Image (cartoon, rainbow, N blue to C red; front, top):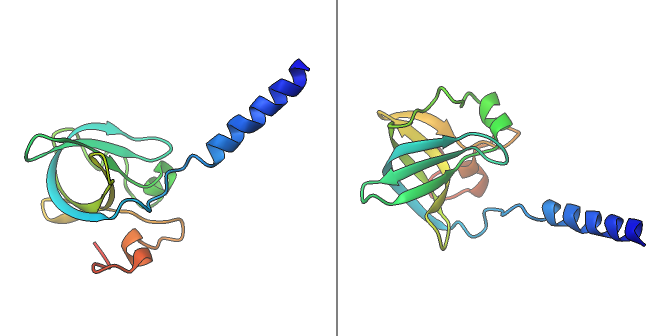
Length: 132
Protein backbone atom coordinates (compact mmCIF):
# COMPACT_ATOMS: atom_id res chain seq x y z
CA UNK A 1 0.00 0.00 0.00
CA UNK A 2 2.84 2.41 0.81
CA UNK A 3 4.46 1.68 -2.54
CA UNK A 4 1.19 2.44 -4.40
CA UNK A 5 0.79 5.69 -2.48
CA UNK A 6 4.37 6.69 -3.28
CA UNK A 7 3.81 5.98 -6.98
CA UNK A 8 0.55 7.96 -6.98
CA UNK A 9 2.18 10.89 -5.18
CA UNK A 10 5.13 10.88 -7.58
CA UNK A 11 2.76 10.92 -10.55
CA UNK A 12 0.83 13.85 -9.14
CA UNK A 13 4.01 15.82 -8.47
CA UNK A 14 5.35 15.20 -11.97
CA UNK A 15 2.03 16.20 -13.48
CA UNK A 16 1.97 19.45 -11.52
CA UNK A 17 5.52 20.27 -12.63
CA UNK A 18 4.63 19.57 -16.26
CA UNK A 19 1.67 21.94 -16.13
CA UNK A 20 3.27 24.62 -13.98
CA UNK A 21 4.77 26.75 -16.75
CA UNK A 22 3.06 30.10 -16.54
CA UNK A 23 2.80 30.94 -20.22
CA UNK A 24 2.64 34.51 -21.45
CA UNK A 25 -1.09 34.86 -22.12
CA UNK A 26 -1.76 37.25 -19.26
CA UNK A 27 1.15 39.56 -20.03
CA UNK A 28 -0.78 42.03 -22.20
CA UNK A 29 0.11 45.59 -21.19
CA UNK A 30 3.03 46.82 -23.31
CA UNK A 31 5.59 48.99 -21.53
CA UNK A 32 8.76 50.84 -22.32
CA UNK A 33 10.82 52.05 -19.39
CA UNK A 34 14.26 52.72 -18.01
CA UNK A 35 15.52 50.59 -15.13
CA UNK A 36 18.64 50.09 -13.04
CA UNK A 37 19.75 46.50 -12.51
CA UNK A 38 19.99 45.53 -8.83
CA UNK A 39 20.51 41.75 -9.12
CA UNK A 40 21.16 39.07 -11.72
CA UNK A 41 19.30 35.74 -11.41
CA UNK A 42 20.65 33.86 -14.39
CA UNK A 43 19.46 30.27 -14.43
CA UNK A 44 16.54 27.94 -15.05
CA UNK A 45 13.72 28.07 -15.83
CA UNK A 46 14.23 31.65 -17.13
CA UNK A 47 17.06 34.12 -16.76
CA UNK A 48 15.82 37.03 -14.65
CA UNK A 49 17.00 40.51 -13.85
CA UNK A 50 15.84 42.37 -10.76
CA UNK A 51 15.68 46.10 -11.38
CA UNK A 52 14.24 49.34 -10.08
CA UNK A 53 12.41 51.83 -12.24
CA UNK A 54 12.67 55.62 -12.04
CA UNK A 55 10.01 55.71 -9.25
CA UNK A 56 11.92 53.17 -7.13
CA UNK A 57 9.61 50.21 -7.84
CA UNK A 58 11.33 46.81 -7.95
CA UNK A 59 10.65 44.74 -11.07
CA UNK A 60 11.16 41.06 -11.88
CA UNK A 61 12.27 41.00 -15.51
CA UNK A 62 11.83 37.63 -17.21
CA UNK A 63 14.08 36.68 -20.11
CA UNK A 64 14.24 33.51 -22.21
CA UNK A 65 15.63 30.26 -20.77
CA UNK A 66 19.40 30.33 -20.11
CA UNK A 67 20.48 27.84 -22.80
CA UNK A 68 18.66 29.83 -25.46
CA UNK A 69 20.06 33.14 -24.23
CA UNK A 70 23.60 31.78 -24.26
CA UNK A 71 23.16 30.43 -27.78
CA UNK A 72 22.10 33.89 -28.97
CA UNK A 73 24.90 35.70 -27.11
CA UNK A 74 23.35 36.90 -23.82
CA UNK A 75 25.28 35.82 -20.71
CA UNK A 76 26.52 36.97 -17.30
CA UNK A 77 28.96 39.35 -18.99
CA UNK A 78 26.18 41.11 -20.94
CA UNK A 79 24.83 43.08 -17.96
CA UNK A 80 26.02 44.07 -14.51
CA UNK A 81 24.45 45.30 -11.31
CA UNK A 82 24.19 49.08 -11.63
CA UNK A 83 23.66 49.10 -15.41
CA UNK A 84 20.94 51.46 -16.59
CA UNK A 85 18.88 49.80 -19.33
CA UNK A 86 15.95 50.77 -21.50
CA UNK A 87 13.49 47.96 -22.12
CA UNK A 88 10.39 47.03 -24.00
CA UNK A 89 8.15 44.24 -22.75
CA UNK A 90 4.77 43.14 -21.52
CA UNK A 91 3.66 43.48 -17.89
CA UNK A 92 2.11 40.77 -15.75
CA UNK A 93 -1.51 41.71 -14.92
CA UNK A 94 -1.09 41.82 -11.14
CA UNK A 95 2.58 42.12 -10.17
CA UNK A 96 5.65 44.13 -11.09
CA UNK A 97 6.90 41.48 -13.48
CA UNK A 98 7.59 41.75 -17.17
CA UNK A 99 8.34 39.47 -20.10
CA UNK A 100 11.19 41.39 -21.70
CA UNK A 101 11.18 41.54 -25.50
CA UNK A 102 14.14 43.92 -25.89
CA UNK A 103 16.89 45.41 -23.72
CA UNK A 104 19.01 48.40 -24.73
CA UNK A 105 22.15 49.78 -23.13
CA UNK A 106 23.36 53.20 -24.27
CA UNK A 107 20.97 53.00 -27.24
CA UNK A 108 22.33 49.65 -28.50
CA UNK A 109 20.30 46.45 -28.56
CA UNK A 110 21.70 44.22 -25.83
CA UNK A 111 19.07 41.49 -25.78
CA UNK A 112 16.14 40.21 -27.81
CA UNK A 113 13.82 37.44 -26.56
CA UNK A 114 14.22 34.57 -29.03
CA UNK A 115 12.61 31.16 -29.38
CA UNK A 116 14.53 27.97 -30.24
CA UNK A 117 14.22 28.60 -33.98
CA UNK A 118 15.68 32.12 -33.58
CA UNK A 119 12.38 33.89 -34.20
CA UNK A 120 11.85 36.86 -31.91
CA UNK A 121 8.97 37.09 -29.48
CA UNK A 122 7.77 40.23 -31.24
CA UNK A 123 7.72 38.61 -34.67
CA UNK A 124 5.88 35.64 -33.21
CA UNK A 125 3.05 37.73 -31.80
CA UNK A 126 2.87 40.07 -34.83
CA UNK A 127 2.16 43.13 -32.77
CA UNK A 128 2.47 46.81 -33.56
CA UNK A 129 6.19 46.50 -33.08
CA UNK A 130 7.87 43.66 -34.96
CA UNK A 131 11.50 43.96 -33.92
CA UNK A 132 13.84 45.37 -31.31
